[in-house]
Image (cartoon, one colour):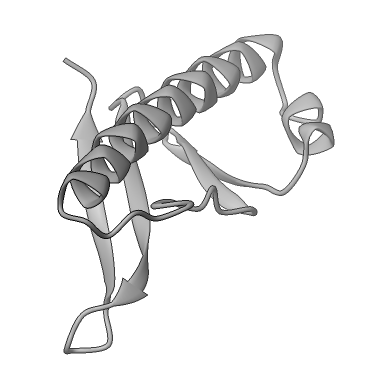
Length: 96
């Protein structure tokens, strides 16, 4: 099966995926990605607080996002702000 990509802007977009199997895969990857993001944010917030620079939020959950039905289990978190080259900071995870 060829890789397919879908723009997800709401729960309705997940509901509208072509198959139930794709809906299940998308929801599982969304859940895993959100948990990874929150765990990463908790670590980042603890580090900033320990450094004397507490923050309210370290990550933003971006909507819409692109979900690729590719079974790679890759997740990219985009951090607020940009580096010196104007690029967004990113953290990439791959399913073990």
